[in-house]
Image 1 (cartoon, protein in one colour):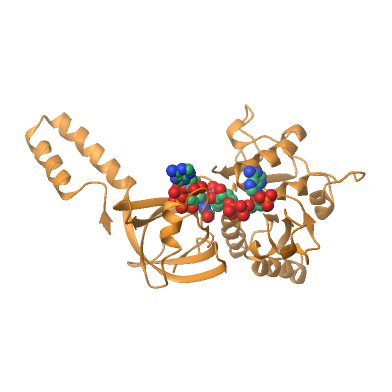
Image 2 (tube, protein in one colour):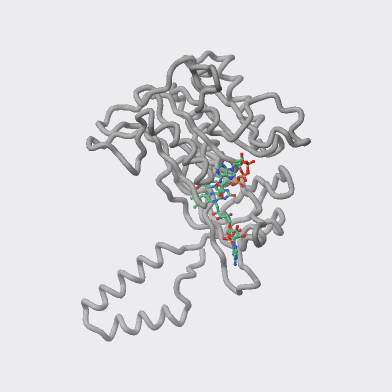
Length: 318
Ligand SMILES: Cc1cc2nc3c(=O)[nH]c(=O)nc-3n(C[C@H](O)[C@H](O)[C@H](O)COP(=O)(O)OP(=O)(O)OC[C@H]3O[C@@H](n4cnc5c(N)ncnc54)[C@H](O)[C@@H]3O)c2cc1C
Ligand SMILES: NC(=O)c1ccc[n+]([C@@H]2O[C@H](COP(=O)([O-])OP(=O)(O)OC[C@H]3O[C@@H](n4cnc5c(N)ncnc54)[C@H](OP(=O)(O)O)[C@@H]3O)[C@@H](O)[C@H]2O)c1
């Protein structure tokens, strides 16, 4: 484990001041030191698996060098760091963990190589790495986690609709595998949106989770998965016969039909009493979902009712 927040010289400087100065100042400096220390502790890991879905979309596994994956909650992110030779320093970025907390051997991440308008600093480095290469990681954190309880401390048994745009699917893979592992009886609907069919990451896994639901019975495992393709007219997508449009289109009724595709799928009207939503991806995806949900009386975590209740959580960047 390496601590990168203070160089050795800085470390020594703090220690010298702590011995010489007033005790209160010592405590103050010590607190700052500890706080900074906790914030940026790089652990070492090895990239143990790379699955190239397409040239700019990859599943990575990072195996901690010392010990196992620490405790985390489904939906949290890990910060990974690589040295960027152009800058001569380590660059760190957050990535949602796709593997469930029960997977103790590695973190699995679904990462897009950002190339426009200029190559991303971390992803360009990462996409040049190979299996066996070393990588730094900072312990998982984040609040985009599953609400097991409601504002009044009762269990939240509402249907969970998980809307992921592109790599925004990653936290929901962790949710789904965790809920499966813990034997959850909640109804789970995963809706994934991608521009191209070959960007439907985890398609086989999600289809298999739905198949298990059909095989075992929905009273035991209640899981549904649907995808939407936003560029259906393009040649690569010519075989696509499912939902068309961005993923938010699942929420909007088609002309002349009363129910939305989501309501058609679950067989009832969606209300704040029967459904909670989790949305992850571009801010436009979040806004698109809220455009539909807010007029229907749904409230977000960031805009809770006075009693603390809400039914939409989201995480986005950009
Ligand atoms: C909580 C959280 C979870 C996330 N999870 C995931 C995930 O699971 N998968 C995933 O792929 N991503 C995820 N991200 C995004 C990720 O953290 C990075 O932001 C992303 O990978 C880009 O990092 P980068 O260093 O390659 O790009 P950066 O170098 O940070 O560049 C970001 C953007 O700015 C542009 N840019 C940079 N410099 C300039 C410049 N000088 N002029 C003009 N434009 C410029 C780049 O072209 C790029 O479009 C997550 C983000 C958050 C906050
Ligand atoms: N936890 C998190 O916060 C987290 C986790 C993972 C990913 N992310 C972020 O989520 C975003 C998704 O990236 P990606 O490369 O995976 O996505 P992407 O493949 O480019 O796009 C995925 C889908 O989103 C649509 N889309 C693109 N821009 C949009 C916009 N402005 N508004 C609404 N929909 C839009 C696309 O439609 P078109 O075909 O029409 O473009 C496509 O259907 C990135 O910013 C990523 O870093 C965040």
